[in-house]
Amino acid sequence: MTWSWASFFEYLTSPYMLMGAWTTIWLSVVSMIIGCSLGIVAALMKMSRSPVLRGIADFYIWLWRGTPLLVQLVIIYAGLPQIGIRLGVIESAIIGLSLHEGAYFAEIVRAGIMAVDKGQSDAARALGMDYRWMMRIVVMPQATRVIIPPLGNQFNGMLKTSSLASVISMEELLRHAQELAQIEFRVLEVYIVAAIGYLIMTTTWGLIQQRIEAHYDKPFGGSAGDMAATSIPA
Amino acid sequence: MDMNTAAQAPARQPNSGNAGDSPAGELMVEARDIHKAFGDNQVLKGVSLEVRAGEVILIAGRSGSGKSTLLRCIDHLETIDSGRIFVNRHLVGYREENGILVELTDKQIAFQRRDIGVVFQQFNLFPHLTVIDNITAAPVKVLGVDVEKAQVEARELIERVGLPEKENAYPRQLSGGQQQRVAIARALAMKPKVMLFDEPTSALDPEMISEVLNVMIDLSKQGMTMIVVSHEMGFARAAADRVILMHDGGIEEDAPPTEFFDAPKSEATKRFLAKILH
Ligand SMILES: Nc1ncnc2c1ncn2[C@@H]1O[C@H](COP(=O)(O)OP(=O)(O)OP(=O)(O)O)[C@@H](O)[C@H]1O
Ligand SMILES: [Mg+2]
Image (cartoon, rainbow over all chains, first blue to last red; front, side, top):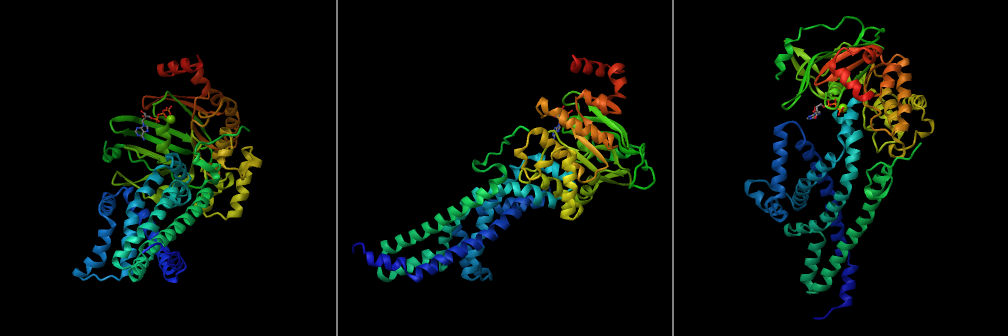
């Protein structure tokens, strides 16, 4: 069997592949949003004064970062029914990907918050802001600038990592490619089309990410994340 | 040092009266026998200080003598090990339960800090906000002032510190002296009853020091109660009612400026003056 351009173009324009790609996108976005929220909560817990909250956060991060996502997904989807917890494919995929993302994102958020100068929280407090206002108005907006580049990389990773959900039969791009490959055995063509699909998604995201970063860099004088204030004499 | 020892300070009720208006001469800040350690390092070893409404106090002393720590304790940016601090007659940072100090909640402490403005050596402007947003953020969010009204007041303050055309600039576009003046305006926007300055001109190039000091001198003339940590002795002579020397975690000298400079009592003050006046 040699390379077939006809099959290649057929897969490239196949609605079935497109549907898979669409699932990859929304699965990634949803898991990213939930995962980031979890990560922020875990980061704030980890930085709290309460040893109980810190302990819970540490345990979560340790457990999820220390085990493969593939194993986590299989346990959630195929293992939990054994103790009476039955989750559908979509729920399992979202829960697995989100919890996994949250554990990594927690460390990113923590690093971002710690990168904000302590003088900033002193100034916020001195102005009468309580913890919530201080975080919302002063700390988080500045941490965001530090968090966004790694956050973008995490989302790039998520677009690709979500393909692992194919093992629990989540109908995303890779799964659809596998199914088409089993019909006509045009393995090379169909997987190259899948690869192109992932490339288009990650490249598009890269462009979006650049714009977001530029937006958050604006008050600091544009590119290169130059924190040092360049003072212009009066 | 444990919290119980705090109870040894005589339980003293702050003066009765309306908390709102404070005619000149009333106690605005009162520190009683403050102890504070960082680990084994005893930084404040029983500091007592009284500042009356409208007074301007200058605190000097060599590096590490505890000046910043004292200011930070007054705003409860640091906890204390024992003693009492009252600002505008309210016990700062704690409530007293059977003679024991119990720390207030985050929200209660935030509420108390509205009375106290702080200006830091490093300005600490919010780099992601423009000048006007730096000034209006706290009044709008914390006090609930209407945005438009806050902006009108902010513009008056910007004018007062001499930076009319800078309201939409970001901090990094300003010189150090300009940033510090914005920081003063930002603190004033909360209408504090007392202003604390921690070496407000130490991070500035020499040519910018006077523009900041002039704003502070104006403020003192308008009757603001001020505690200023600084080595600007010109400011002390121009605006201070009392000059204090901190030495090794305690107050060594507390005198009007002329007396402080011309007839200091303590050896530490004489040595300090010899050093800074050459
Ligand atoms: N957060 C902290 N943790 C541990 N030690 C501290 C802390 N803040 C201050 N110290 C220590 O407390 C002592 C007094 O510091 P403080 O900043 O109050 O001195 P200062 O009189 O303001 O000095 P300077 O003129 O250098 O600003 C120093 O020995 C300092 O190292
Ligand atoms: Mg200091």
